[in-house]
Amino acid sequence: MLRIKCPFCGYRNESEFSCGGEAHIARPSAAVSDKLTDSTFSEYLFMRENPKGVFLERWCHTSGCRRWFNVARDTVTHQIYEIYPAGKTPKTTIGKKAYQVNWRRKSKAEVASKYLKRTPK
Ligand SMILES: [Zn+2]
Image (cartoon, protein in one colour):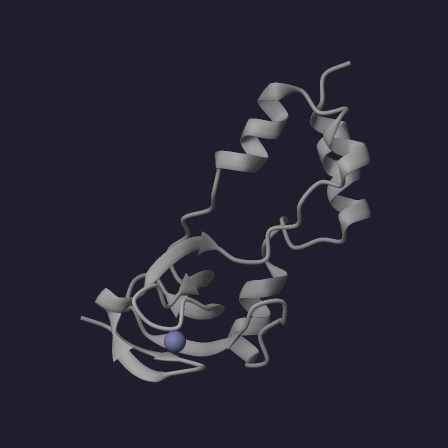
């Protein structure tokens, strides 16, 4: 079992937490959402990366303080490299690298542009 350090409560067993999946997903703006097809929007809503290696995830201390935070974790070894606040970006070198390789971590304008390009005319 993993021991995870909640930034607010300290170390606790993994069973007290829930993983909310991929962190830092940029949401399409409201203006763009109206123009997306159901297929494109469902891709944004449901499709998630599941890489082998260091990955940035959202975790919640569900049986504790119920607060959200982000974790840079290796999905193979389960080693945790960094725990950092929700709404912030990773500070470690390995966390920064994981942040930069994902196409979802773009500005809202870039994301809007990408989603609109995928929408069939
Ligand atoms: Zn906590």
